Structures are given as structure tokens and as C-alpha cells.
Amino acid sequence: ISIKPAFAEPEDFNYDETKVPSFTLPDLLTLENGDRVSDAETWKNKRRAEIVELLEKHVYGRAPTGESGLHFGEVEIDDNALGGTAVRKQVKLWFDGNDQELVADLLIYLPKHAEGPVPIFLGLNFAGNHAVADDPDIWLPTSWVPDRDNGTVEDNHATDKGRGSQSSRWPIQETLSRGYAVATIYCGDIDPDFDDGFQNGVHALFDNDDQWGTIAAWAWGLSRALDYFEEDSDIDHSRTAVLGHSRLGKAALWAGARDERFALVISNESGCGGAALSRRRFGETVERINTRFPHWFCKNFHKYNDNEDELPVDQHMLCALIAPRPLYIASAEGDLWADPRGEFLSLQYASPVYELLGKNGLSNRDMPAVNEPISTDVAYHIRSGKHDITLYDWQRYLDFADQQLRAR
Ligand code: GCU
Image (cartoon, rainbow, N blue to C red; front, side, top):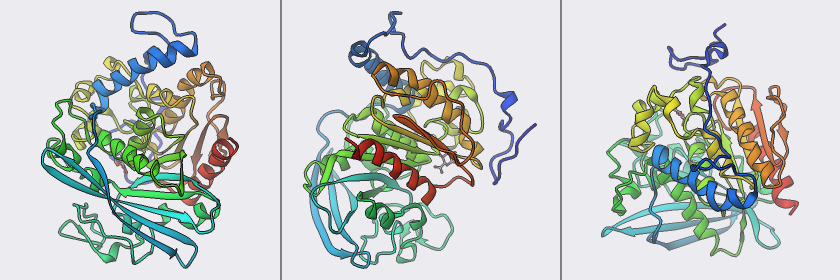
């Protein structure tokens, strides 16, 4: 029986579990020379690096590894933000390279009466920092923003009308009241979300033939926010949770995989090119994502359009790179496009690496029922409702952070 997605999703894609082809996943625990990985040292010293290299080469492209060209500009602080409940900081992150400059605005809310440095949730946002909260003092982005026909954007520039328009996705007060700070950057400040052959945004600042796509550029930007946290004594940078929804969840996963400073990684409905296994071809496929969003991944990834079985990797390997650090993967029942089961299975198939490293995974667990989260040192839920990030999702992430970051 074909299950129709609960909201308008492209037709002519497979939403039927019985039509998922059979496939064999690349083995996580076999080195390229054929040897078995049977201890933590071999994973850490050899296999992990092999998988990073494969994912860079075939999926995301290679971000620059040298100097980032980052320096910190203006810092604005308001000790009395959000009705007196929060401290707001805004920081200009300046990047230099190739005789050009780029600026990205980092917005941070801190709990008002924190004693000592606080753990922090970091994620990119879709529409501009001003959209995450109803706060008239948030700087409007000056970079290109997509026009979603909701009257908040003029000539691809953000306007005051967009203030707070995405606040349901950012339960800031709830997060602060639980003792965590929240930080965000507009994704388009790092790299605008349209195809121009890898020329705009931060791509312009580096000579780089490895064609890091937009997802890799966003992930790189998340690491630069963490560079800032290391300099800010109000923030406990060693307890940074990186999260993202959908395309920005793909970026959060890749950031967490590449940069082991991230202490907790959260993927909210990241789907194809994120948590979902490509070989299942359920909902969005490699061909469709590369056609619709040619700038997200590297050119090599296009070789696997309708050719998933030839991929030397699959997305369980991305999840495994996060081990032994805690990882939360979440899906939504009405988001078949992102393949909830494929997202769960990635986490399950990554679990042997957690277990090898002395943590508990989800190896022998069934996919849980809707709204029944499960957690060990990794966690998963499938929420009722559509493709979105909601208070329900954040509450689960906060509970998991309490368990994994606070209990340390
Ligand atoms: C599209 C795209 C997905 C992506 C999503 C989003 O649906 O096909 O891959 O995750 O947009 O970012 O909301």
C-alpha cells in the first residue's frame, strides 16, 4: 500500500516500504585494506579518517583546513533582553580571504542569572537572525535572503516584517529557563542558498578546487561560531550542542562529524544527504536532491544519481563519525520525504561503533512508535505532525542534553 505523505510532496517518488530495494551497505568496521576494525584505537586512528575522506570526496566536498580568516568585530550586549529574562549578545564574525571580506552575524541569548559558563545550543537559521525571536534589536541580515512569498522579504532583502516569523522553531525562553544558552547564524550569511557554481558566500574567499558544497560551507560556519565560543567566558564551549532542521540538519551532522569539539549533535528531519540512508531511495533520492539543489553537495555526488549502490559510503557512516559523542536523530510521521525509517536505521547501523567505543547504541532496538522517544547514549524519536522543528522536539533535545551534558 502506498502511504501518501500528509502534505504536498513531489509525486512519483517511492513512499511504499515494500518497494524499498534490497541493498548491501558499505561495512563500517572494515578498513580499505580489508582488515577488520576490532578495537577502539584502530577506529580512532585509521577507520575514522578513511570515512571522513570518503564523505568529503564523494558527498560533501572538502572545506579548507588552513587559516579560516576569521576575526571578531563589533559585539553588542543587552543585559535586559526578552523582557528582562535574557542577556543578548550579537557578534560580527568577519572573514578575510582572496582580498575579499564576508560578515556573518552571530546572535546569542544567555540565561540572565547564570552562575558561571553555560552550555549552549547552536544552529543555523533559514530566514535571518531577526526571524528567530520577536526582539526589535536583532540586527537584520544584509545578505541575500530567499523570498518565500510571505510578505517579509523585499528584493531578496530581509525587512522588519520578518521579525519573530520563525520563533516557533526557536523556543528560546524554554531553553534559557533550562539553563542553556542559544546561538544562531543566518545560513545565508555563510553561503546563500542558491546555485552559482560555488562562487558566492564564503566560497569566494578561498581558492579551493575541491568544490565544497553549500552544506559543507554551512558546517564550516558552525565551527567558526564554536571558535568564538572558545573566546567567550560566559559560554561553556566544551558543552556545545549543534543542531539543525532539514537542510540545516544535514549541515549540523556534517559539522558534528568533522569537528570533534561539538559535544552533542542533533539532526531534526535531515533526510536525504543527512541522516537517511541513500540506498533506500525512499522519498527524496540522490538524483532529485542533486537536480533540485545542485549546489548542496560536491560534483562527485552527482555520479550516484540513480546509482546509489555504487556509493562507497552511506549515511550510517556519517552518524558513526559522531561516536562516541551523543547523537540525537529525529523524524516526523508526516515527513515521509525525509524517510523516517531510513533515518532510524542509519542510527541503528552506526551503533556498533558506539558499542566499540564503550557507549550504548540502539543495535537491538525496534523503531519506536510515534511520540515515544528512546535513548541510550544515542537517541531517536518520531513525532506526530509534519516537517518542522517544534517545542516537542526541543524538549526532547533538552532532556537528552541534561542526561548527556549536565550529568558529566
Ligand atoms: C527540501 C529538500 C530537503 C530539505 C528540505 C528543507 O524538501 O528536498 O532535502 O531537507 O527542503 O530543508 O526543508
